[in-house]
Length: 109
Image (cartoon, rainbow, N blue to C red; front, side, top):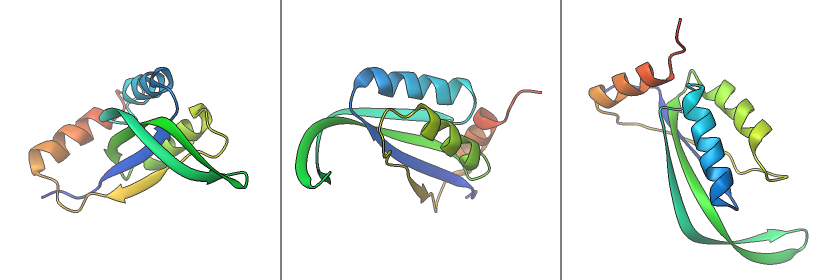
């Protein structure tokens, strides 16, 4: 098992934003893969009231080494005033996947 893989969670309100951000992160080699899960409802407190809205969840797979650049780009491109950016370390990653992920996020020379 290799170490260094992380999964970043973020939500956006529209599928168009999800697709734009997903493509950008993968094209720029900041993420190896972004899984987009639509059709969810989020309930949260915003500006003193409880809000319920539809959202799209992005599961962004990258490496710890690429995380600072990914976070910076994600925050710059995110449509929300206060974006959710939650990072989870992947504790057990099969070597072939870890190798693929590392290759996917390594900038071209």
